[in-house]
Length: 257
Image 1 (cartoon, rainbow, N blue to C red):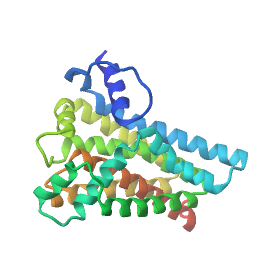
Image 2: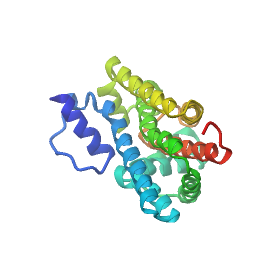
Image 3: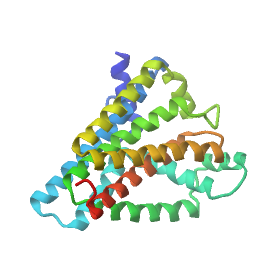
């Protein structure tokens, strides 16, 4: 029963998909991180289905690309983008670590967050306009699942910047070998799927995700001393954008497709 409740809790926290509501208990959250990537799976399926529909019905490119930006936001409720914006304000404050952590907790939006989100959005939409190959599109859509498996692994193994907060709570209740192994297995299955579509294209897109994963570890350790709930959203956002850019480059340069 706790597994089913963990599924509902994951979708309740990380998505806007309607699920049954109930009082949360610590034991019910134990396997929550195992289901976090499934939300990415839903996003990937919806986005791929939308692009297939656009091809069948000859829907215009502008409409197609804009919906590629809207679908992840609609499903996640902007949860990860919020963390991305807070993290951008903190990183670009150029203050001491303690001050950066205070900025992360501040609910107000700074100028850097707005500017960088606008820049990111333009790059993200431009990338999807360049992904014209359906094989590459399937690989990039699978990336929504992969980014969340890596984010979940980071929650369990990366150093934490704070000893309190939502991320710390999730780490405490989910830190078991079983949860870590399930996340690792899901990431392997996802990468195998990407490689099965195209060894070269799948390897490049997955490689980009792991490169961002390594950068995430180094950047957060240097700037904050570890990760937080906000930086987890930052990672998911940057990772998905980077994979989209790689997918567009593969299509433009006709590498492995």
